[in-house]
Each structure stands twice: as structure tokens, then as C-alpha cells.
Image 1: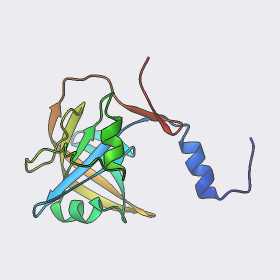
Image 2: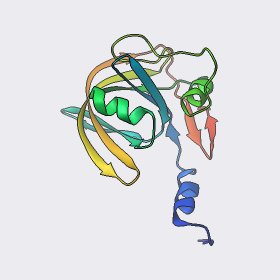
Image 3: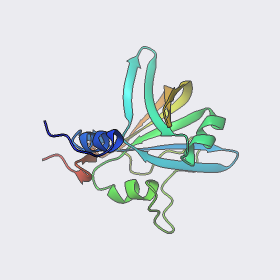
Length: 157
């Protein structure tokens, strides 16, 4: 295995680019303010009770809203939603507002949306590891996920 003089963080970033994942938008609303962010750190934890986890950088604009709300949504992106991922990853599209106005902001055109109450929060370096209890599931019409691998979006063959 080849090693370099780069930092361990940079090496980890490079290694993780070789791990394929789905793409989600995590969103929360509190006191009329809505925030969302693109995330690939999402996984199922338990079916009984139904728990999932997401990892949120403490510096993300989403974090204080999610923390206060005690609720959030995980929206799994479908193929063709690269623009949505970019929008919530810090490259906003002017006039684009795909989150619903409901109490729990779900994403228009999502593969599925999980509506969660915060179950637990754990420290994780620069991030918070947020475990959510799934309260409701909304399944979209598209059945093919948007994938991210090797620093680019991919589609299933």
C-alpha cells in the first residue's frame, strides 16, 4: 500500500472517496427557519425501535436548527437530483426551494423521506452523531437512488 506525506485527514478523505454511498438531504425547521444540507453519512441503526443516524458538522447552518427543533427529515435523493444535492451542499440555485412547507420539511421528488424525532446525540469530533427515531416514512415514485462515488455522482447501470 502506498503512503504519502499528506495528513491523515487528507488520506482518510481520499480513502472515503472510494466508498460508494447514497445521497441524502437532512432538513429541519424551527421557529419558521428551515435549513437543509447534503449528507452521505446516514445509516439504519435498528428496526425495533426504528432508528437511523446522521452525522452533522457542528459548524453547519443546519445544526442549531436541528438541535432546537428536536426533529428532522432524511430525504433520500433519486437519480437526476444532482442539482438538489449541489443546492444543499453550498452551491444554492437562485429561486430553488424544493422543501415542503409542512411542519417537517420533506423534499419534493425524493426517493423517500424519513420523518424523525431526535432520539440521542453523541459527540463525534467536529460532528454530532444524531440518532433519530423514525416516526413516519413517505415513499416517492422514483425507485432509483442517486449515488456518490470517487467524488462524482453515479447511476446504477
